[in-house]
Length: 583
Ligand code: AMP
Image (cartoon, rainbow, N blue to C red; front, side):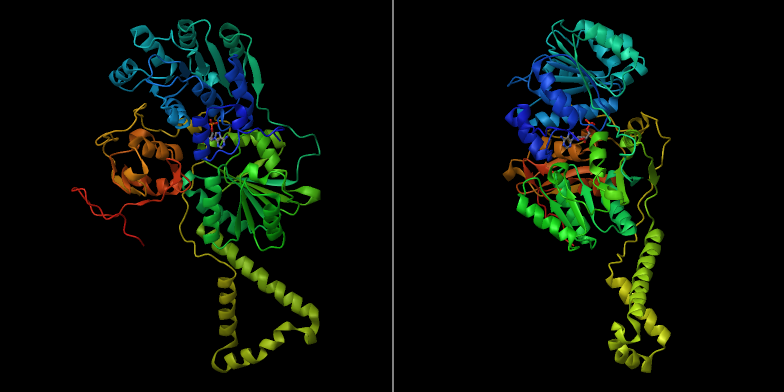
């Protein structure tokens, strides 16, 4: 487990950045953030080993934001080099999200995107450029990207950049940067070629490794580890299904943010579970009460962030669920260490979005045990399992009654009821109907929507997830304005109704930021935005409407949680709008 729990405030970040993190619901720094942020802030060079999913982007983005001077940007102070255009977009969005309150201007720069637009934005000035090496070299050679002002260079996923043949480009770019700049290198692996780059371009770097803790022989918990590959949009439904089949006696469900905790607890309650949300802000007495409810069976599930679950006495848990893949193998090991204690068998369930799949290999290494990838139960599986549960339940009652002997039978008091029913119906018919009633009241959900299966890829294919995402280009650095007609062409358009508008100070960039922040959409996917007094309308690809609504449940816009729904109002062109029709 990470030893000293430090807070973002302890990291000495600016108030605006802290506010952004708070709004995003980040409760505490991930291990790589806790270690890397102080180093990068101190100005020293850094060589860090950390994979995707560890929170590495914020680990360099947050300290980089400390360097942003107020006011309009001129030449870039930071240059982030990344291997792919997808990552360029993703990192730009992250920097923008964390630094929104500072008015940070970020420009993603990559090949295959019209260079004219990039030139225009570069001329206007930006704080941070996030570029693929090839396109960065183009700009340097054209004279459109001046690196004299760059105070910090970040090489993100350096191993990938080398694998993709960018070594010479990296040399060219780094040589064009001022000598006294700071250089920060992140890499998932550290082959000798990385050391060569570090020897050439880093000065006495601090080395950090977010290590996967390997437990000693015999210490590995007796835990059955199962993972389900599922798209983000179907995660909550998938979890409901998995829990129905697993029927845990007591489970702890981990989410990444408070918003997610609340949303998931609500969803699970709607599915008939007694789920309690556990928050970081609760005092010991409140926690004890929640734990008491779990222990006595009044609650089945506890939904919590890592911070909230810290120090909980959870001896009797049967299941730990990673609704969100933990950011480091270390944290995974710590989470699942809560089951399988004292020789009891425990189950660790992890829901993985396909692009994070590679973390499972790390979890296997860290626990020394296999993580089996299972298929999400189908509707038929669920039905079969529910029948099994009903069968078990009735069988148990029959056996208990048998043990009590003919005189002690609790069921005898129902004899008059049975006799009365049998006057009009067959015994068989009565029994079947009684079973149906047992089945229905024991919480069998009428869940009949299939969850789409995610195609499994071979393990160890490091780049498959990211490259497979095929995200469209992003017109980055865009801060809103009239976005009509700025959408990827061709696709059908759906419209979202967002319950905050001008009177709440909502600006187009807030909506873009919230949507791109919570979903896998990029700014380019977002169409016309219209802001009314009390609500806003946002166009997104028709196929993503539900996904966005799902994801936006925990999102806040300008610091407030706002409702987001599918807009079913009239196609209004005249400024009048009735808002969504409810129900
Ligand atoms: P990365 O490894 O940078 O790709 O980050 C993985 C995911 O973790 C991203 O979705 C981030 O938004 C999220 N994230 C990063 N840091 C934190 C944190 N301290 N708390 C919660 N979520 C985080």
